[in-house]
Image (cartoon, rainbow, N blue to C red; front, side):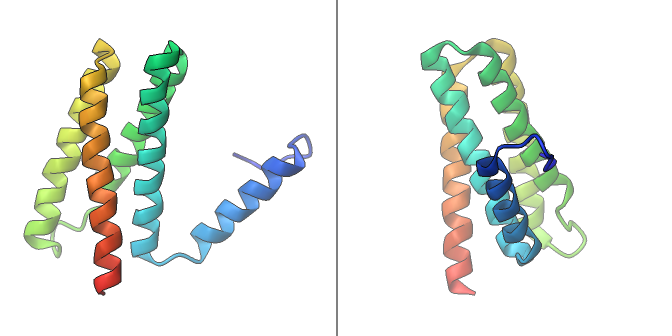
Length: 131
């Protein structure tokens, strides 16, 4: 979102806050932010099944797919060892599941991906606490 003269004060304030959080973040924190956003958007997609908002469901699943794709291509496979290789496989699996969920409108796949992303975020946050 670009900040423009037509943006509401609330949106401008929120965007400045997001940018400030990202600009000062460590690499670990950036991944945490990405995972938080993936979880947020998969929950929005999940809720859209109940409300029947097909367009919102689709746009939310696309956002999750973009985030997961970014995480996958950002992996350092040369230096990350087995963990990076395992994450690459997990991210590819999640991307494939999201395509299935989007194409078939499959709620159980969305729930499955939501559980994976939530576990991944929880593990990532725990890992930060151990560093």
